[in-house]
Image (cartoon, rainbow, N blue to C red; front, top):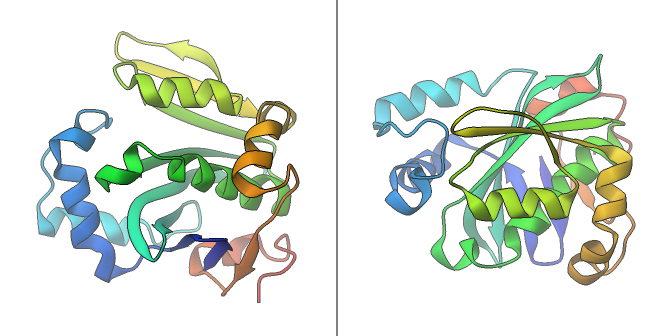
Length: 199
């Protein structure tokens, strides 16, 4: 599967991406914000990759200007309830301080919400990850539960599009859905025929 908008591409995670994702995951600057902070070995990464080949998750590499810069995913996909848990990991230093992550989130939401008729997205964020918490507020997320270290947040379709209207105009050139979807990604076959232009 491939989602394209300008210089930003979201494409299906492949086995050849695993080492770069593992290096991002083990990088101290990235790791300190993750829910699971254990060092990941090559074997553990491959074992994890095999668990992503299910119908209830979708992992996509983020490319900006033909360079892999991060990983975005929808997990715990519930077709019946039209909900999913979304998260993102930016691995490339330059992109952690750019708008690439926001563009990727908008494109994933366009796919899952606008194209597949999902109504609710959840996110779990470490409270020490202040940039992610601030971004979630701009994207329409509202905390519904907190622990000492985690914030559990949700965002409804209508709130997301209302909160991101101006951001969409600036980053995507329109406040409307603007994605080009190509390829029959194995991770989305279960959603057919909800995807309108999966070819």
